[in-house]
Length: 199
Image 1 (cartoon, rainbow, N blue to C red):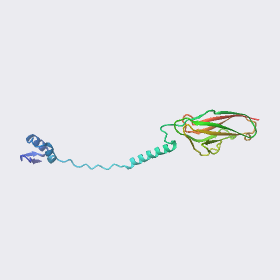
Image 2: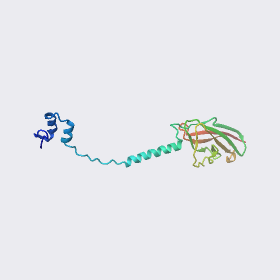
Image 3: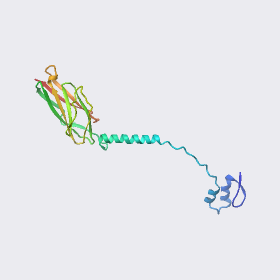
Image 4: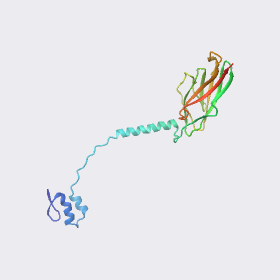
């Protein structure tokens, strides 16, 4: 299709009109005739992007971060680490009664230490955890109630161990273990051991 040049009236192919204007009428600024005479590109209608899945992913990420900070107390990459000055205790000779010993342990990590329970290797032995004056339920070999405690970095706690000699059928001599379950990746079940000689 031919179009008349607006300057000289010459018939020019429509697709060549801009070139004609630039070559034959160089005094006209290109921006003027390009805007006037170049064919306009058709408007492209883009389909709206679905934001639902992206919003759902963002909400999930925020929730996960919130749970992490609620559980860890917002530690900057720090992890709790359990340390005990002693993890073995010899009761020596014990009477036919309940004997008790307290182990002290500390969080030597940079973040909070979660204690998620304890268990013992025999029904004759039970344990409780005490953190900041709060006490856990009693744990045993078969009695493991749901309980979680949090120990701040540098803080200490107490593991009280009870040995009941009347639970044993004979005069028992040997060791019993108590396992403290934590989120310390290097020591998820810190073991404490008692030695007894029933009299």
